[in-house]
Image 1: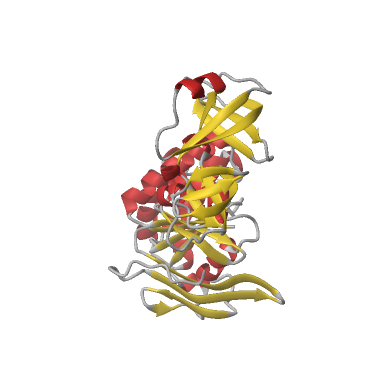
Image 2 (image 1 turned 90 degrees about the vertical axis):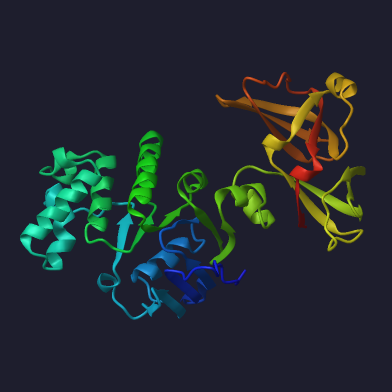
Length: 368
């Protein structure tokens, strides 16, 4: 996917054009083009080695593209050093100076820019209030918790008022509860400041929680771009469907317009005109969109028009607090998962035969 993702109604703040990064024969970023709008929170999401951090490093100026253009506000930055790009950066490891106080760590970017003392103090005080660390101003990093250290790193990145803030796995070293608390703080900070934030993570839940848009990376390319809602509910391809959230996949064969065969059984399908009879396809349905019924319940509740039903055997049930999952296997060996709220319950046990149902409108179809 080499398309340029952009909103043509607005001039983008950042434009990446045909960006490539090679390390010998290894292609880390492959002809990537992307527009980033001013004031948006965009997350680069992908597994290790997908190219997301390398793309962020090229935008920051820590890596030089093998080819391509990086423009911010219409200005080409490829040959501009990092400290002259007006871009803030926050890393997972914080990179705080252990011998300096919180106040002096935050003030450091202003000191190297030779800002006068009074103005420096005013800006540092404002940052301390913003990240709610006024009471810790004179402490050293070692005297702070991980979450407090990360707030210092964010304040230091923001103190010289960059137009863009880049964040590379900034919360990855924190425990789940603290990570979620800081995610909420980051979201509120973004709303208050209207800052453009580009965020890198491998955590899909974090991406969904924080972002206005998510760019999903695979093998140096962007393979999906959009809001978390659109990418989850209508994934553009099977990779995005499998990477973002949990998915059930069924290998089917198109048998005509609006119909397909699965393990010898006919299914209603949301097929398009491009699908031909005999095409091998993959049907995807989310676990929460599927229902599992006992044989008795299925017999007394006829299948509604536009719905599908397959027989399966329960293999496992898991209680996950608010929800429960039921794993089943069809006669042909296809594994499916059904999710329901715990209050609703899944009254089955391993070995039970059930009917799994879903609406054809809730399924996505991809080429096999």
